[in-house]
Image (cartoon, rainbow, N blue to C red; front, side):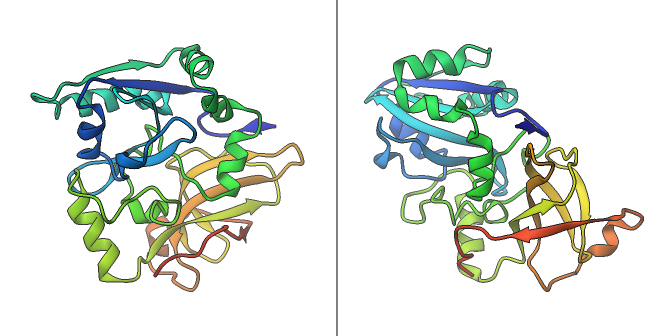
Amino acid sequence: MATTGASRNDLGVLHVRGGDARKFLQGQLSNDMAALGDTAFMLAGLHNPQGRVLALLRLAAPAADHLVAVLPAELAAATAATLRRYVLRAKVTIEEAADGTALADLAAQLPIAAALIAPGAQARDIAAGVPQVYAATSGQFVSQMLNLDCVGAISFEKGCYTGQEIIARTHYRGRMKRRMQRFSSATPLLLSPGQALVLADGRPAQIVDAITHEGGTTEFLAVAPRPGDTGGAGELDGVAALECRPLPLPYDFPD
């Protein structure tokens, strides 16, 4: 199976250590660090103050004072730098490892990490409607555009974190007009994260993640107006419509 866009094998690891590690990340990320353990990864977003997703992290806690986060290698250094700006007096150190052995080394210590690089991992995430954020899309989407509220990546009960006010306001004010949706093309296509295109029904869309299957189809996730809403199509005048068909997501939108 060949992939388009960034490769799922290009993953980096952040090690967050110290007595305040869990408390520190609780104030920075969108999910509830109190539920973090070592038997499953938790998905959470790092946001800017405007509520836009800078990175998506899969987190686990090998120890009480050691939390790990897996994310695209191309975002590891920038994400570590962003987090370090907020450390202040907290007893926390943040170390990034983005070389080719980073995830293999983690998997040797934390068996659940092996699933992240197992064959078909990216295809399974796309089929499950689980997004990824790459350098090209960092800061482009608010949480609900990526359906983070549908895949358990946001806690609306926890305390404040960077971007929380915007995310909560978006959640409670009603229907989100643009959502990530799943599609399949009839022919193989080279689609890259952040790429703008026009869907067959005229809706403008932006690629989140994509993979080309051995059978010749390309399956992709893209943020677009919801079906029936065609507003904004004129923004991509001159771009030919892409022949593709919608595929179902394994969850419903809450609004």
